[in-house]
Length: 403
Ligand SMILES: Cc1cc2nc3c(=O)[nH]c(=O)nc-3n(C[C@H](O)[C@H](O)[C@H](O)COP(=O)(O)OP(=O)(O)OC[C@H]3O[C@@H](n4cnc5c(N)ncnc54)[C@H](O)[C@@H]3O)c2cc1C
Image 1 (tube, rainbow, N blue to C red):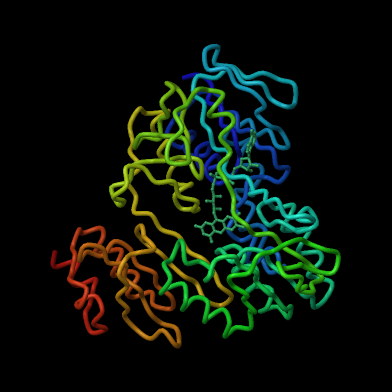
Image 2 (cartoon, rainbow, N blue to C red):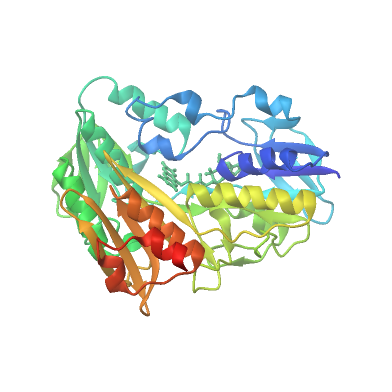
């Protein structure tokens, strides 16, 4: 045993610290986070937190006293500034130095900076303090929102705001919002559902600047807004990994299935990790989703404490679009063939992503029964042909059980 130092008290870092104690690590645990809020679930920020409907005890969790009870030395409002792989020490922004035996990189992503004049006027929703600042403005009464970026986070904020009496215009550079993660066909339906809920989406537009009264598009048109939000994506924070000499690959810190980096005694988890997955064809994938971050944190803790554990989970994520929840399992690719089951109008349906005749992923909305069946099929390794998947009379769970 010794000292486990975790850089980043987000979703992956929190899971790692709590799991370390649970699996019997008796050494010191130092969890360093540069935010001032106790560790919290990040997904609600762009959904319930901004519109003020979140139950904060369920968002900021576990209860703050848990860290002291678990003998976790939680340093909030503190950055890991520098790290030395040979000496195995790290310098923190509070002026202290920590000598570590195991170092866990859990630094997540930083919001992308774009060279758009005036972009600093726009709100971001990547951290709790930013979401609370937005919440205070939305609480003042109906607002006109212009949201730059039609990814999941921009569309979530738009649908949540509209459902609470605000108006929202989403400005997206690509021809369709969300086409990169979901593929064009599925994204077109998601867009239609958002529009039916009152979100105004302007796709294929270029933002020239952010002005006091709104957003100026290329060509001079101004989209008036009381509040501008930038939801233009993010990039992994790799500075500490680079300082340690960790191999960087596929846009992240290259790790093995035990989340170990190329530097002995150093792990990388969550959004920054490029990891091998039995569910992806590619050699390594990097995934910015909550369930993956938590699973990574747990497996890294088992590795550190027990020397065993592999991350092999089926990737899953969800996105709330107003009253609709999209649930995705597997690793979809934008060019996969799409096979539908159910009613896309209600909507109560599932899109199966098919590659080489095999289901590789599925996106379900309002269709929990099919989603449960899909999970069971993946777990059992059963691969019904696409026509069988599409047939609403097929009981997928029964097919999985039959093997
Ligand atoms: C608004 C929003 C909505 C989302 N919605 C969903 C969703 O619906 N479904 C889903 O599956 N996923 C969602 N995600 C993604 C999910 O939250 C992330 O994948 C997850 O939080 C990643 O965990 P992480 O620990 O790697 O990074 P983070 O949770 O981002 O935590 C990293 C932490 O490290 C801190 N840090 C960075 N550098 C240092 C340093 N040097 N020293 C100390 N601290 C440092 C950061 O400030 C941050 O607090 C959403 C993300 C956002 C921002």
